[in-house]
Image 1 (cartoon, rainbow, N blue to C red):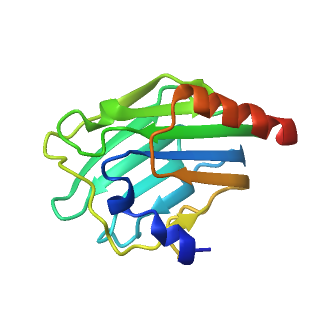
Image 2: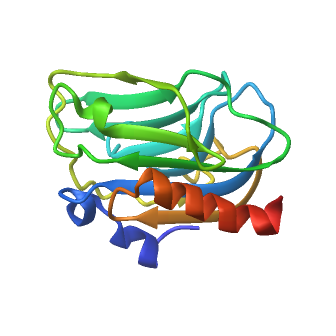
Length: 178
């Protein structure tokens, strides 16, 4: 579903304060990209951010500057745990961009920081506020990159949550989902 409150979280809302995403999900093993949340159209003309599990089972947060066609992203070094309820999170502190934007991205699983690798682009400047709709469990309305598995909770924050806050969210959530 999209629209309404989801469109309140646009680049202008978190440009200077960062962005955090948190999810309780059970990832199904499949050889396809599985989007948790995205403000990204599949036609490739209004991309802003995408948080997904890649076709090779790694979690990834991707920011994009549409007008100059430059991404900055971070991918976990190990595949995510699949088949059981887990908490996943990411925080982005350096939304101002620049050659080291990916250094300001952190990935979490079950409340713990996980090793990840950033991919920098020296031409990455700053996030733009596109007119794309924000999608939960998909990248767009077309049958592409739908989330395979179950999503019980998605939380978006227009600030970069700390490691302690991710841990606390994970602990509370795991009381309900194991």
